[in-house]
Image (cartoon, rainbow, N blue to C red):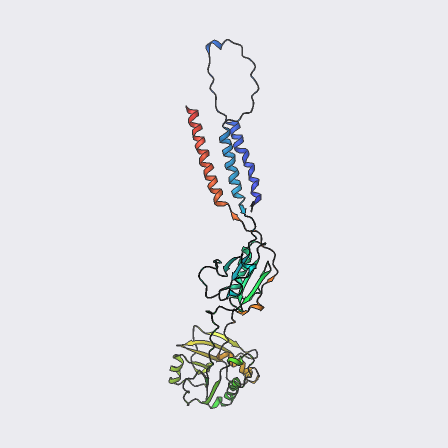
Length: 397
């Protein structure tokens, strides 16, 4: 345990201690001379040399101590406690620590949840983990360098970010099974999706490319589609005067004509439409750009239309303005337009997310003594005022 200063240069202000010392030397208690008649005819003797003498030494000591306390407050004193060697164990919510809770090497450790505030492990069970990576970094900066850290994690670790977890210490990384009451994400059987392609006579040729790209989804030619969870697709290609199939998911409107009223109502009720920019008014405040061609000025925007989603191809629907139709990757591109990929999950396998040691040790943490110093200064000032007022009263008496 020790006391340190965050701003030791402030100690130069200790030179101010000379002020009360000089004041006490120059303002000594006044003495009144009294004349005695019997002594008036005696010859004056040589006066003894005047010696330096300090009156009210207790008051002076208080003032010196008060100034010293003020200077120390400016230097920002910190209290550094004794470095702890007590081991810590943190459990990521969702992990089942039953397999390691009786480990004799962890029996005397301090158990906590890896959650904001690091609550004690014997508190209420936490169901979900949040910000696992940032909490580990915070805990690493909080613990003393001599404290060991054991982290108990489930096989699939949530709460990660885009940065590798790098700490200042080596971590005992214990991978366990998930708790029985925290099941895996329920597997949903992919349903069949219906994509309707409607074209007029002028776009009959270009509709073949869209039809072939959509049918390629069922052939499994898309690299980014998970084969175990790949839905099946029904592709319905026809002229614009053909009604949409029941339960349609997407409408690719390859025509310069406006949408029929029935299709407009279907879109407003929650449908999804891809159409050309010359097919309807496209002004919308919430429009965002999704894609732009690297070869032409054609680009794709998305906006809301009632409860539905409207994609607009800004440019002519032909091979000259949309040469991407000839690329082998166009099925993947079209699939990304219609069904944007979900955001990257903040999870990874725990064995791949084990923290590495690559940071310098954090400096020891201390408690600031600012509040204690303020109370000490206030007490010294009150005591100094009390003694000073008593001195003035005594001098007047």
